Length: 404
Image (cartoon, rainbow, N blue to C red; front, side, top):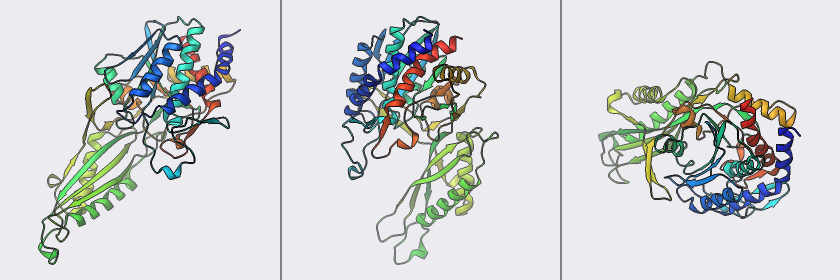
């Protein structure tokens, strides 16, 4: 029997096993920085699946290993989730992990514990097949992605020196093959006015009105942004996500204003360009020189469940690889071998840990994951069991496909 047939057969055999493992992960609530419970569940599942090595890194991510080849490939799933939001919008307990109607239901089902469940099954399949090829296969179950995507991998690469030759993100792609996505950054704009009594606003200079004009300038900047040259990733975007205005009292002209911006970066755009654009548009809108307006990129710092503090600036570089790249082509070949058809090759709209592995460190990456992108952060989240089976087979197949 050919290797792809063996893999497909085993993925089908472990279909229920994969769904049950996803259910167990959903039941282990794991908000960013508080992932210890789910990490310990995953560690045990990897050990039971026969992984050659399982350990926690310094931030608390679970690292599993199968094989001991000279090259390294890493399959990555972040295992923290966003919060539930308004519980009244959920039709069931978000942490039930219910299995019904061909799906597994609950917070994190698609974003992105489904990928993690398929990874564990893939590791079990590789062990049962006696994989001993040229790759050391790492399965990384990473923490704090929702708060600061890529920081977990910045830590792994720069502090623990785990530098793969290839990376596969298992974020949801609807079982399509992705080869890039826009980057992003966060920007904070601060402006000052002059306070005066609210009964005589003409004596002051309102920071609130400056903020209003600045917000409209950002709206115009968003309209003016252009797509990348091949229009694969599309245009960058910018939006005002928060406005804060302060003054001496509720009966005074406010003298301080802050705008918080979410900037999505297409190919060819970087932090310096984005900050300079904001300075230009805001200064022109409020009629002041650029040096009177503070435009900065904030710094993120957090202590994880293992009590290790770590941080980085809130900049997440854009990445993409051509369809002709060997990793993309090997992924497509593996998919064809398994399912006798070509995969859809596309991109994510949102951001992933690949901003660190590929945007920051230029490690070749692709995405292939169970579930749909629109399920992320939404109420009544779920994942198809069919997708879990397909992805488990794809992950197990990829090392063999790359060797060819």
